[in-house]
Each structure stands twice: as C-alpha cells, then as structure tokens.
Image 1: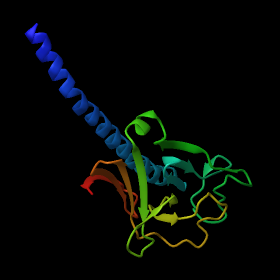
Image 2 (image 1 turned 180 degrees about the horizontal axis):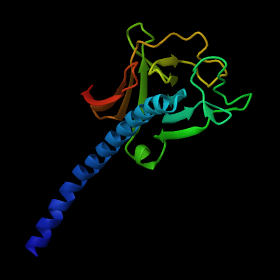
Image 3 (image 1 turned 90 degrees about the vertical axis):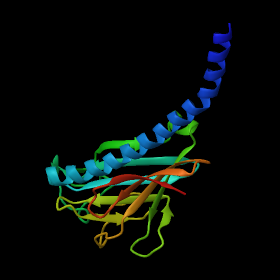
Image 4 (image 1 turned 60 degrees about the vertical axis):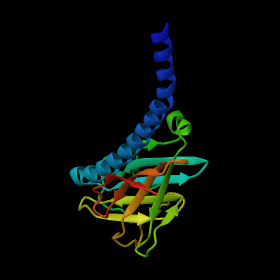
Length: 197
C-alpha cells in the first residue's frame, strides 16, 4: 500500500514536467519545420530552375502563423523570375502558382501550448520590426527578394532590390522565456537557434 501511495505521489509530481516538455518539443518541432520549409524553397529553386515563394502570415491572435511554399510555373515548366512577367496570384498566359508545402501553427497542439510565431524583418534599416505578413522569393541563382505587403499581388517583386537583410521568425510560448528562432539570411540557408528573452 505504501509503495502504491509513493508511486501515485511521484506520478502527480511528474505530470506538469512532462506536459511542459511536450509543449517545448512542439515549439521546437514547429521551428524546425519552418526552417526546413525555407531550405526546401531555396533548394527547389536552384534544382528545378524556377522561382519559389514563401508566404508568411502571423497576426496574433487570429493567425498563430502560416507559412506556405509556392512555385512559379508557366505551361508546366518552372519559370526563373520573381518579378514581371510573373504573376504570383496565379494569373495569366498558362501561368500557375501551385502550393507545394506549408507549415500551419493554427492547430490544436499549438493552441494548447499557446504558441505564436513572430516574423521580424528590418528592411535593411535597424531595428527589426514585427510583420503581420511577409513574402520571400528565391531565384535559381540563390538570390532572395522580400516583399512586406499584406497580400500576394501580381507584380509584388517589381523593382524589388535583392535582400541583404535577414528575417527572424520567433516561435514562442506565452509566458515562457525560451524562444526557438529561425534565422533566414539572404542566401536562404535558414538555421535554428534558441534564445532567452
């Protein structure tokens, strides 16, 4: 009987720690999936010779974070340009912009863990500010272009300069100091790191 009581007490004490560890693992997994999405976008652009687009939205509390990867195709063949004549809305002349992959933080594990993405970009002028939506286009040459509009538009990269400013995506839990961050430099070779706020 004493052994049963001791095991019960230890189980009750361990449950909060196990729950916190599970939520932290979810945060780390989400950050890793976002990092991999950026790497896939860059790799796909170089390997297939077609421009790719990563569309990001994170507008708390309505959107915890949505990250979508698109590819620029004309008549079924990858097209290499981010700017005109590319229509990123999937417009005209046999052009389509199919959805290739995505990471959505609006599911149950993220809601239960109070996870929120914060997308920061400084547009080559410090300090970095939070963006509710951001679009990154990768070319087959490994270059990246950034557009900070709210929706995909036909010519959103028209005249856009090559981006020298990195993007930081913080995946954080409410009330927790440790943040999992994804740093996306202009090369698109995203990396994952942790920081304490």
